[in-house]
Each structure stands twice: as structure tokens, then as C-alpha cells.
Amino acid sequence: MIDLSKEFAIGIDIGGTNTKYGIVNHRGEILEKGELKTDDYPEIEGYVDALYDALTPLIKQHVNGGTVKGIGIGAPNGNYYTGTIEYAPNLHWKGIIPLSKLMTAKFGLPSALTNDANAAAIGEMNYGAARGMRDFIIITLGTGVGSGIVANGQLILGHDGYAGELGHTVIRPGGRKHWSTQINGSVEAYCSATGIAITANEMLNESKEDSLLRQYGENLDSKIVYECAIKGDKIAQEVYRFTGQILGEALANFIMFSSPEAIVLFGGVIKAGDLIMNPTKEHMEKNLLPIFQNKVKLIFSELKEADAAILGASALVWEIRE
Image (tube, rainbow, N blue to C red; front, top):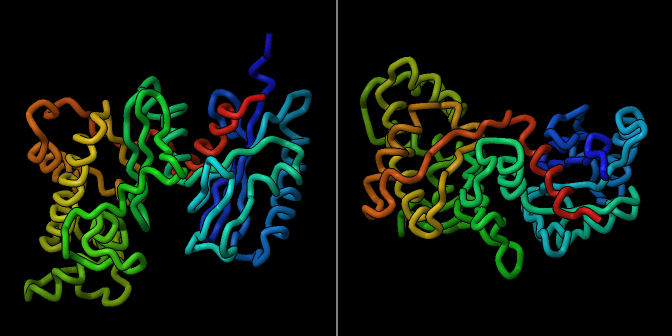
């Protein structure tokens, strides 16, 4: 009989600026974690070497007498099927990077790779608010808007590994042009932290009303919008109402597509609490067919934002057990 307490996984979350890593046990406890600067390594081989040098002493310290079963990686444009990062716009390494193969060669361990939002969904299913659920959607609301869709207990990957880009679906045809994709009216253009700041600037330009937001000029960001909103600033509060309306309408579409048990919201934007939750819930329900109304739980993630990506990536390892 396998002693699960002696099995461990490595979880790695690759961001454009920082990479976070940790050693995780079966209970979802991170025994130790660390980070390094992703953009310090212009060549992928140097990056893999740096991860090896950082993780090797941690493995020796924490896996005494146990076994590391593998490495799970969450990365922008990570493809689970191929184990490659493909044309990630916010990483130095261009083209198709066979990261899973490189990591296995360096560490001598099986590895699996997926995109960061899918990793968050797997983490939520194993360790967070979606434990025991077979049908749910996670929406990550940060600098961008990511998503992971689980249906019938399985992550939806699509034929090429890229299913689930709900943040780039169009919710306002002909609307705001996305700063990177150039698509007009996408969910991400409005509901990300970046989109919230843009909305605030637009509302300030369209109004002559006094607002605490006006003093910040080019430094205005979603954190400032939140701080002003909780102080009672009307324009800041309207930014969240408007953002929640668009998000709620988008979630209604997603619900009618896959009929999930719950939608889990995750990321920096959810720190706004009821400011974002209340209008989102209102407009989600308002735009659903009666057969879907009042059935789908809208909840915040239970995972610490700082740990969720490591946990989600590590949970990939239990899917690749030898």
C-alpha cells in the first residue's frame, strides 16, 4: 500500500516577472516555497538551471525518505497536450518552448504543464472552494481575465489544449479595443484590473463631478479605485457597478453554455468584495433563462492568492502518476 504522506509534488507558477515554486504534500500544504525573477533569464536553459539550483536543496530538506512524484507547471500559453509554452506575449522566450521536456531532462522527474488559469481551476478542485464539485468554472480577475472550465469532473482543454479563453470572448460588440489582442469589447477589456482603471479614466473624462480619483492622474489603478469606492466616492462606486454588470452578463452566457454548479472568482480584483460581487450576481441572474436562475453558486476562491498557483500546478502531478 502506498504511503501518501511520503509523496510530494513540485508546483511552479511562471509569470512574466516572477516565478513562484514550492514543495507540496498530498494535503495541499506547501512545505516551503520561493521565487525567482523570470525575466532575469533570457534563455530558457538558464532558467531551467536556476530552478534546479533553487529546488534541489529544498527537495533534500523536505523529502527526506519520501518521493517527489513529479513537477507541475502553470504558465502563460501553456499547452497540456504538448508540454510546451507557445508564443507567450509576456515572456522573453519566443516561439514554442518545450518546457516540460526540458524540466524532465534536468530533474529526472515526470512533468506536466498547463496554462495558469487551468492550474488555478485544478487547485480549486483539489484544495479549495470547488472540492467535491464535478462542474464549475473559475474566473481569474487580475491584470487580465483568465478561466478554467471543469465539466463532468474533467478540465476542458479542447482539441488543441487552448479551450477556456473566456476572458477574450466578446461581451460588448464594437466596444472598447483591447490593448493587446485588438479585439473590440472583450470581457478582459472591461473586467480586469487594467479594464477597471480604463473605465475609471473614461468616467472621469465624461463627468465634471468631484471625485477623489482625480488627484491620481496617470497613477490611477484598480487598487486606488477600490480605496476611493470604500470611502464613498460615487464615480469609483459606479466603476464597480458597471464592471460587475458586464461581468455578470458574461457569466450568464458561460452558465448557459456549461450549467456549472458554481462559478469561483479568484484574483486581485475580488478584494473589492461586495462592490464587485453584488452587481455581478444581480446581472448574472437577470440575464439567465429561468431554468438556470438561482441554481449556480457565485463564490470567492478559498485559496490564498499567493499560494493558489503553486497548489494548482502541483495538483497536475497527481494526474500524471506513473
